[in-house]
Length: 301
Image 1 (cartoon, rainbow, N blue to C red):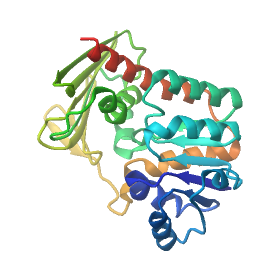
Image 2 (cartoon, rainbow, N blue to C red; image 1 turned 180 degrees about the vertical axis):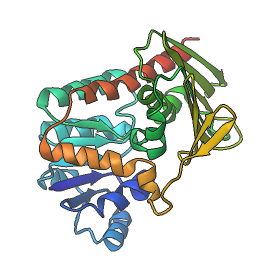
Image 3 (cartoon, rainbow, N blue to C red; image 1 turned 60 degrees about the horizontal axis):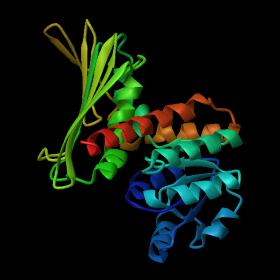
């Protein structure tokens, strides 16, 4: 199966090319305007099908494409891919705008094509272990950075959307209410707190861009146990006064632990078979819906 990749930025180099170049049964077709990047890719991964021209790449016969270009370019690229009957995997967010993101998802659905957003944490092994904890009454996730206050829309859609999607993955209840708080100063968003409320429990997502450090931690609690994960790594269970650290495979690649193998494999399998649930469109849209609500709430203050 011919698989396209367009836009070779940091995430493509760190995560997607290493996984896709080792995936059996696919032929990679890579497109980027940077000639030096193409040369480096050819030497590193022995990829033969390289393009600087978008139209030539689009006409190469690819059945599915990974879009890793700038977010601003996503809409036009995805439109052309869908118009040519090509399944799409795109880095989050689909676009910075809810209206255009919704339009593209509905367009993919109407054509029977995939439009998958790269929410890798749903496939991260430590978070899958948190998902196993039944009947959670509270979930708390923090994803913090140091000295990175930013413009609200980019802050939320580029980064905080990972927190939103992870909460949606771990929180198994219909949401009755959403509360949003944040701090803006001199046009920059410093931190945001999101609270999802249901009759059975509460899920809280926090991002502080002025935390002095970068860290990610998640706690899932029920009446009998609290499970914690720090920096998408080991899982620790607390029951009464006892603590248990779940064992992990030291030989398991980091990209597999962090969910990239899982999300990529799932997409390729669905693209090849043409069999996938229509629920995936709504699942990915929900994170964008809440992200837009966060931006509108904070910017209207």
